[in-house]
Length: 192
Image 1: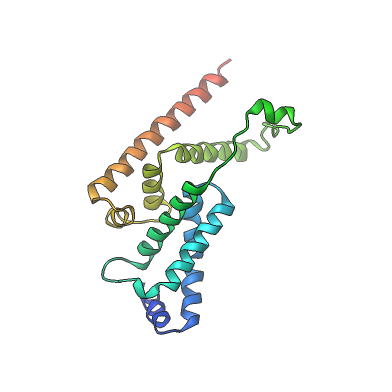
Image 2 (image 1 turned 30 degrees about the horizontal axis):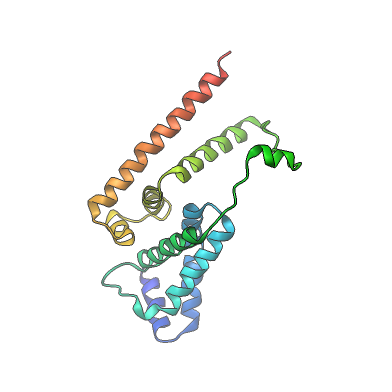
């Protein structure tokens, strides 16, 4: 934490190496958060880049008395992801049209059993997280992917701390129900 504050101070004084250090330090976590919120790597890359660029250009606006730098940066990242989602328009195509155009579905047969099972579980968790409403998805990703406290969550999401806690709790409940239903369906499908 001390090195972050030193980098911030040096960058505020014009040391470009400090800006590069901040960028390199936060690049991966910012991308992971954006990817978790957007579910698309190219959109996440652009949103993370926008957030980091904005934070570094506007470093004079950062106030260490109000929040940690990571909290401030993740606030900007969430905002950039929300903007990107609002502007995004994806054409939808039905499965039958997709198949009529000659596209084939990937082969569903698993490779080595343990790896396939783990991949399936990972996919189900990912789909369950992506199916959450935006406020719940943001809360759960900021809490567990980005490692923010509830106080930081409240600041990033611009809500009271109890609301941030409630969103995480509701996200847990929805994920538990969704994943429990998947497990039950899976077991029923395997019974012969």
